[in-house]
Image (tube, rainbow, N blue to C red; front, side, top):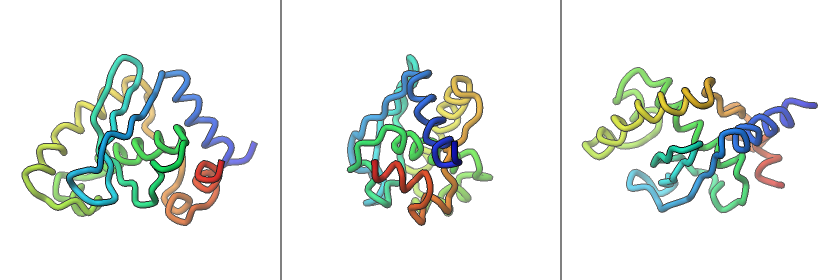
Amino acid sequence: MDLSSNAIASLEYLIKHHKIRIENVDQSVFANHWRLVNFYIEDDVFAIQVDDEYDDFKIESPALHLCLVLRSLEEYKDATDFLDWSKKTGIEANNNALEYFRTLAPILVDTEKIIEELDSKISDIEFTTNAGAAYELRNK
């Protein structure tokens, strides 16, 4: 099994094993290419803002949608603070963004309790250049 197949299989395993479902709710209040989604995982549901710069929610691909949610949580986890997160995501540092940022800590903790390792499985370079697993998921 190649790396792309492993990444896709890992995302699909998480979806099945943890009863994950992602519902596209609306356009985000933060930016045109961001989406508000409901992230259902086991018995929990979380409102998450995801960067959908490549219109991936127009594609029927639960594994790709999970990758987007996990990438959003990784951005939060990797940020040193609110201003760093704001800069990395391109979201304007205002009160609405700060309020949302503060909701991410418990979402991250609860998600990591369930799936243990937070890993979107697709590298940034694959994702942005539409290569490997990103290409496969977008063209299934």
